[in-house]
Amino acid sequence: MHRLGLLLLLSWAVPGWAVECRSLSYEGEAYTVCEVDAAAEDLRLFLNDPDTGKPLGNFTSVEKLISGDGRKLVFSMNAGMYHTDRRPVGHYAEGGKALAPVITSAGPGNFGLLPNGVFCIREARADVFETNRFVSESPDCAYASQSGPMLVIGGELHPRFLPDSDSRYIRNGVGTSADGDTAVFVISDAPVTFHQFGSLFRDALELPQALYFDGNISRLYAPGIDRFDAGLPMGPMVGVVAPAD
Image 1: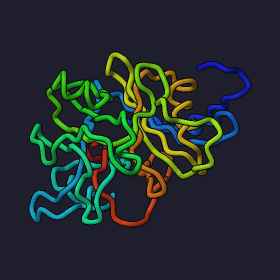
Image 2 (image 1 turned 90 degrees about the vertical axis):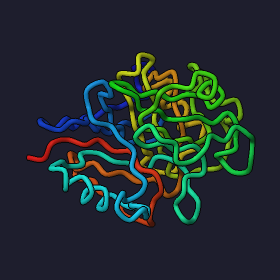
Image 3 (image 1 turned 180 degrees about the horizontal axis):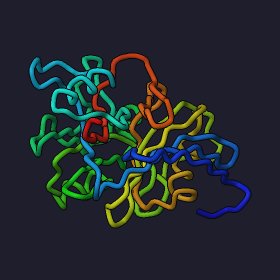
């Protein structure tokens, strides 16, 4: 961390919880940050109920799904853009099986603001890839979700982000460490610009790669800090699963 005087960090590390969530204030804006040890924790993506094939849509449905395996949900967040029927807009994979293809072309909306990227969960690591790099390297992802735009690419902000933008939303996204050991999930506590949000990942969290998940519908489930956001049904969700008590 750096820029002394611009960043205030308050941490609620709850003993026994697999995810550490904390409040972070950076350059006058407040955020909630949840850090996951991707090398050690059971980090997954969720989309459809395996029995019905219908979208899970909310954190409660994910809880019910994994409770049948004697497990509990200790963290979750929306994890990619989706159509009105909650199908992923871009690439999506579960269990190593692609359920939606990679999209490399530019297009309307934030997803098509290239470069966009893919969040990839592999054995004992998690990484954010710029989409063309993802296609070129073809990593073996157990889970993957494409979204956009990229927030940070190789330590640099997305080239289209404007410091004086007036487009502000509650935003959420994920950044990953260079070694893939750590995934850091962030949601803003108030509306922020893309430039502000990307700068948080690059300058405050010092992460080389970061990806935007969504804005306005962004939600967080973090029982360790008594947070359970409600709202409209979601598409892809990311979560950390742990053995039930």
